[in-house]
Length: 626
Image (cartoon, rainbow, N blue to C red; front, side):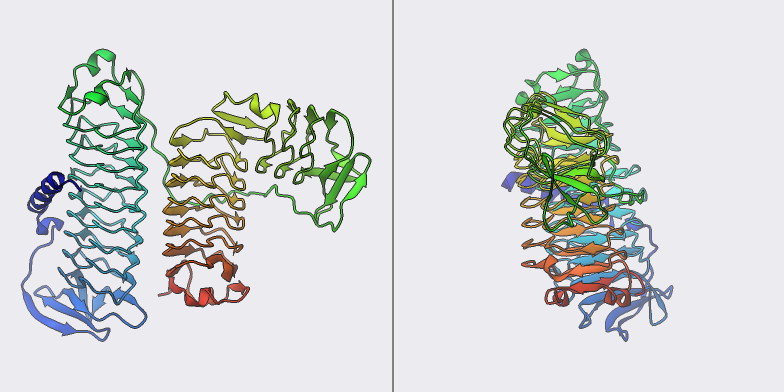
């Protein structure tokens, strides 16, 4: 870090402590009447005049789960004291059962074994409370927090998300400084105090909604090298170096209300090409630009545009009925009928598996030997250079991988309005696919995104698209953030594989992801799929920076080496819906914690296939029935 910048931030942090005093959580102060008390759970506490208690330290149990109870020896726990557990590495999980008024300064600082924290009804988090707890990955139950003091989570290298409610009113300087795994943040409306350098050097932060702020303070996003989607639609000023070093930022929206842009606000934003402005060209000229913004000012603004829309980051599952269009053959051998080979699934439906004819114009039959044709299976017409057109009819729902791969003469594809799933490279190297290369989003059939031809680092998939074909974004080195609207229910195989720069995918309604859908996305730190019902094998394998994964509360089976070789995986949320687990899902992982949405007894009823040699080494935290 530049010494001058670091010095400035240090001074600002000290000022923030003055501006955000320790009594700012609104609690009256009472005298201590006894201290050094030890509970049966080996927690050390002090008692105050009003009968409340403050936890001042203690010994973590052998289970490694530190529980702060709602009351200790009959005294309501009102706080955790300053420095109470600083540097304590004997616990990996923290569970607060009550609603303490505040957690003290440095209370859990440098707790390097701490991986999971549930803050219960905590109302306030004081200075540097969790700072430098380098393995803290998940921090739950932040909905009652009204304020964060400076450096509250600074240096939490594994923290992937921080979701607050509208109760939040203040955020201190450097609150998330150096949280290099934090990939998104939404600031609730109503925050009236927001410090400097809050996200300084948050290298994975791709999306940030600060649209409720009128001022973007100094150094807010300095060195946020993955930031591509900042929302600042109500800002009237941008502070010094606010976006300095946001090297992935391609476009920024400047609100009509903007009055001043501070020194070096957008310096070292090497990818910035577009400035969208909410006012007129004349009013843009009235904005006061401080020194160091010469390159920014040289970019021609596009006036009269609206601010980008906020993305939906809610985690509510979409429980609407969903039927997978996949086709699984139950036949031992293919059956030949005329020019076609076909196989049958367990329901007696047919999938065309090959073509022996010579016609250049092919019509896919709706029925073959009395069996409804619902699929074209893998490589069925692969490298047939004679076929020029194909009529897919009205009964197909599924096209497998490489079905028309290398059909270099294929120029016309008709019908197929019931097709909802298309495999990887299904139309690779066809004239038909190439003829749509000028469309940013090429969609066909029943709302299937067949190809993406854009080059943006942030992709907002249009509403109405129902599925992403296999391989659509494969090996897209520019892609940092992808948002899929509620209409998208299916992500095909390898759809986002090998996207080295990808930090964040938001897919709130996706019910199924295919095999290797996000494989080898080496920069992605967090994956949440609240509506998932079916997960393909190796779907998230070799995601070397993945630290947190939540597959939702609807999926019943997790298997097929889903997290194979995810070497930095720290927490996996397992829904109460899960009935089967395969031990191989964690092969070559360092997963420390399974967070289970049911009880320990219910977890014991899950069927574990292929042995439990990995699962037995995992730590379990049941979220109900504690």
